[in-house]
Image (cartoon, rainbow over all chains, first blue to last red; front, side, top):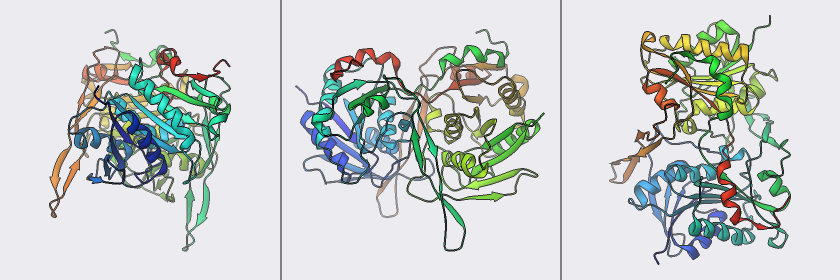
Length: 260
Length: 260
């Protein structure tokens, strides 16, 4: 049987511990091609590079694996991967991460890891973004691997209906303490910003963006609940942002002949 | 009656023609504060600045209007606006744009204009992103103003149910040829990338990202249909990316005790 083609990417760059763990799992399941950004791209969301050039260069840091690094954002990487590096071959799966830190709830929107996976899904490729709830540079990804492998195998063998994108978050717990895997919805949480102000040597103010994550969504079907309770969370996700429930209530705003 | 407080932002910067048109409409309806990026930020999506400092400085290019420009992305601008510039005052409305070029369909995800408006909506502020289907730097925004004003007035006077964000796109047509305003859903379209390859003076390849917008979604309730048929499109939008229809089909992937 032909091995599936797996595109691996991330937002932390090819030298991050998380992508190495992901490559190690992916190579057990298929033929792997890595295309990662050449600089850290956390928080880049769905940004693309419109006013500058892009470059893509081969690297050889994963033994026996075809790999490239790109200038630009995680979404640029995926576009360069599918259009340039893979020379027209369509991956059977795109996996992004493993991110250092949570991408649960609304973090999916800010996350370069998830935007890379979303971009691949928008191109029709089944895609999974993986994140471990551990921000530290030396986070241990070993205990994540069995869950990463299980979810990748499920998608490769069974496919997915009504979605092409999974947002997977893994608690920072020993494997024996992880209770299982739950399919969830995105919690309706938010960030409470709290800029840190400082002064430069000229006495001018500048700011660091920081904040506190606040979840007032108490549903037990959310990703945040699952993670707080020791489960790996899996949220099937898309890119249709329409608020369907709001359409009827806004009809009073219409003008002209709106009967189609 | 107290005038509503209207936050105006964009992704093209304070010197763009589109934001000037938006300020001119907004000042007829309320007290205006402008916070715009200090450099063009098209395609920045929901990017935020995590590894660098941010600055915000007063500017005086709109007569009699409090205005600031920020380093960083459109989303950073909104965060700095609500947390620093407005000193805790909550806007009654945030408007972003008028963008030079379409943000219909999936362009909402790449757009700095829409991400700025979405960020404000995530902070609980009714928000509207406006775009004119004219990429040229000297685009004429005059014919857009009556539609912009109507939609802003509707939101200010009636509020919105089940959404806090509108994605408004305006056809590039004389006002007399615009047939009206339609409430729509986001068309399920995509971009067909087509990188342009070139060589630098050292003979090394580089790429420009470009592409062709393709819409295979033939529904007459979409934003693309409305625009193609001479209507202003209004899509109520949100930030919950969950594919609810996919949840049941993925239950086979669960592990452990998943009864809550």
